[in-house]
Length: 569
Image (cartoon, rainbow, N blue to C red; front, side, top):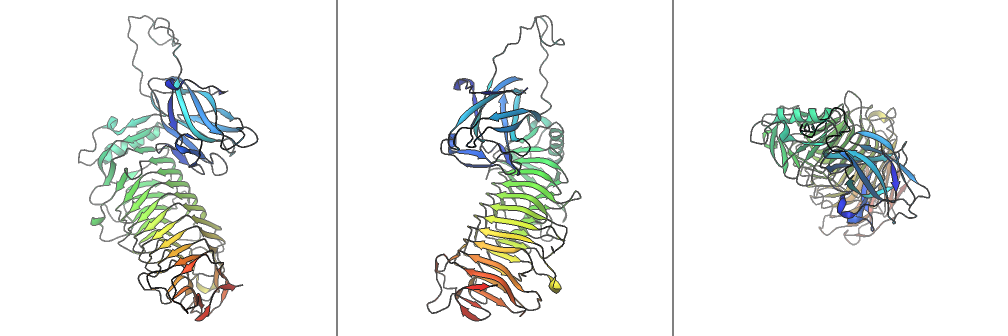
């Protein structure tokens, strides 16, 4: 039973401290690590609970033997009243905990409760009660309760030995909530094919709600299928790589039509890797394939050298993927895309990199491109991430396959850094044939940057005004058109060729800063409609700082006419 006890603080020598923001933990949904000046380590975990179903799970709470422990939570609650949290220990939901108000979001306090732990590693998680928000959590401290068990001659368990001369039976390994090493399932990492051992280990630990720990080493696998409730922890120095001979449609890590999956590593040190040099054709040998899945958390991994996409999120037989969080992960040297998003709701990409994509078009860092009108792009958040060195675009959004019958879209990109891509930093298109009404919704790129792209810093190409509104806010563009490939020599643009029947527009650039020292800029912007169907709802102005266009040239051009700003209603 979980009982909240306010104000208890055990001696430091009796406690083990676990920081909330530690990489081994699972921070999913809306929850995120953020700065906190009074907190230990300078960070805490915020936005737990709420409509975004933020979850903080401590994954490696250790106990030398089974028994009750006192868990002390250090937190802040600047709300005017107490906040309640739903707590889970080793998969068991326990009574709610109350976090009294602390008077400020910068003032720490503690509450304590009793938790039953298994021997070995345990999980302790916090989320909201009926989607209510939870206090911000700095850390937990865990201390096993002093033993009060009678001597062996007076056991509390009737099935235990009744005399001191009879040895006590060994405690069996826990069936739920613990971390189990791959070595428990047989030999692996010795240079052979480890598929059977690793797949069996994933299946067994998922069934028992355990975490599978893959130690440092190199493991060779054929495609792995991740089941419901799987939790995989890659130690620093662990590399899981594809065996030779993947066929054109085989994906390495398959998270398909399942729920509640966690894959955790150490950023830069835990990797999945394929054999790209073997893949001279095809585009579907993805590294991490998420289709029709729900509640998936990925942290601190690399997924590299694939014959398709480093990360693919799309629709499975159970529909679109939902509640997917990928943080602090890298996707390098993949063949088709660093990341393809086809269909999803509540997708969060945070602190990730998508680099050096090359092999087969489009070769972008990120490509958001639904396949059919039934696909969804709702509550898509990409933040604190980057795309660089890709042979295509940095970030590409192509929504022409959605229309008025599709669910409205919402895509928010912030603090994104695009650099050194062969094409444009940001490429947006929604072209429809025959003046079809496009999908409703919004695409917003804010406080982001483009540096040294081969083409435009940002461009809306064949962007019809009768679709989702596109806004760039606070974009910084440096040395665009490095490949001298844009016909207009502009840093940003709204343009299309012939043949389109819809009004072009629905695009806003505001607060844009542009600088150029490469001698490749003729204008800061261009708006060109070679279809001649007309313009609607285009605004380019409210500039930040600009420099680099030759003296005497206008800020921009609209259908060949020199202008300094655009405001087409």
